[in-house]
Image 1 (cartoon, one colour):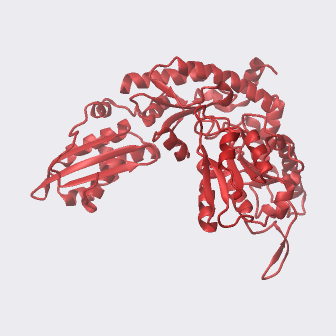
Image 2 (image 1 turned 45 degrees about the vertical axis):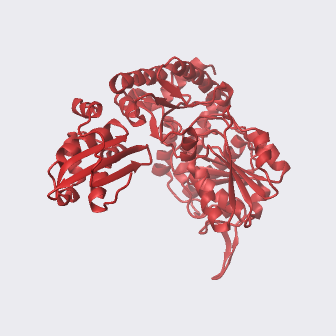
Image 3 (image 1 turned 120 degrees about the vertical axis):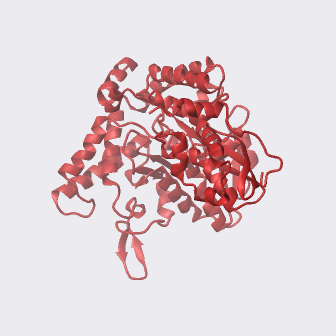
Length: 405
Length: 125
């Protein structure tokens, strides 16, 4: 499917486009194709039931669909088996679980390596655990090229380094971090690799084996699916050795008063009723993605628009773009400062013209401090954005400059 | 409704009571960590009422305008009056603009600053 054909499909498939809003806050959440909404409504209206527990047709249908989605996700990520896919409530829960699970093998004095560009969901869990278990957190800094080299990682590795937990794409800056290279080095030193793929899975083809992820997290609502659903991928051997971190129904086998045995994977890590409508919605989103040509198609469309936006920003005087200079490191997220205009006022101005962006620290305060800024305005695109959306963004910025600066 | 009405922009561009008061009785700084808005208020009292007031700081148009408008209101008020101020008093000053929860925080930062200044006074910069 070429880009023209893709844009035609998109106009037909996404109801929000009729509303005339330029939605440029995709790093925060994404818009849904109609079929995702229809799949959710259909579940609630035609076969609403719990899964794994019922003995009637509706429940069997819902159960089968959820397991099909699990298999679809395993395929989508290049996982070895569906058992390696755990449903969660979102990437934040996934990353908290991953940290708690891996921490079961850590002891006082062990070191966990993060980067300065982490989203709080991949930082705060480790801060909490580090305090509990007396671990040391170490941080990989961004170098002058706004990337991280294996040499930098080598310098930080000690015999006590046990975990590398890092973002694939930085949500506040769009920097594509070299996970594969660093993971390779990590594995040479028997370091477990946890990847926050919340910003990468929806925009690039991601293969967990190629990436070298031992665990990986993403959210459904950033992948054109509903809120309340996410995925934690884990290598089978790792998951087999971890104890559950959330207890309840479904994850057990035999339960006595004082103890219980666990269900096999993946149920062992799925306590309680999962977000069933969310799973079904996510499945519909993935089917849609496959239909329009998969992540490769989406990545190509976004790449073109990212370059268009980079050129537009370069032509905008009085605006500083906080993005890598090298285009190959830069995914479609644009954090910027308009000289003399507060990020809130830029966003407020854009909102008045129907352009949605975000302003603030983007849940990445360490990165903001690295940049010496309290906040930025952030525009982030997806495959359903157009050059006109970028034009409207730039026009809004110019308007804000006239009014405030 | 247009958020950036003329009056707000006017207060932003030409804030009233802007600057420091070297002989202030109370100095109070308040920050909004989510966006970096920061305001410092200087209060000088005579006969238990505000004789002079000023503010400094950096931030978005809403927080700066609200601060400017609030200083106009506070001249001649007592500590008790200040402690009684509510969020709706500030919103009335700004005019009936509909504020999102995020921008509401911006608008209320000055109120937080002056309330804390009289309720928990200590000299801080």
